[in-house]
Length: 171
Image (tube, rainbow, N blue to C red; front, side, top):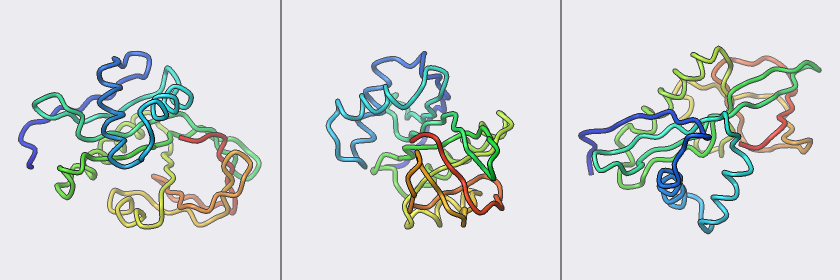
């Protein structure tokens, strides 16, 4: 299925409708096999009112691509920095391979830049190449997520040369 018409929206969490939230959850279920209620609870507990959902919808108003953008506090060399965290990146499987994921990430890069902050995302090793193609750089230092050692990949929108970072929340 090819996308002929689409709409891009950056929606503040406080303004998202139940209908759009339902569509986001159904898309996320294509990748993360959790019950609807678990996805809903995660969103309620982890996406604050002033944080964002970035969606791409097709001509039938179905959500075909999604990610969230949230505020994240990092500790770098004993000093704090506020960054924008990108999470839950997904594209409807029937649209896979058409460049929609790269489009979504390009739009997120634009918004992160407009906020004047560095971007961060956590990903699995097989996705590093995709995110590098989207302009992100792999962090090579030691990472702690909520005070526990994190072994997954961490990517940034800018090169980060520090031996250790600590991330205060999941996203």
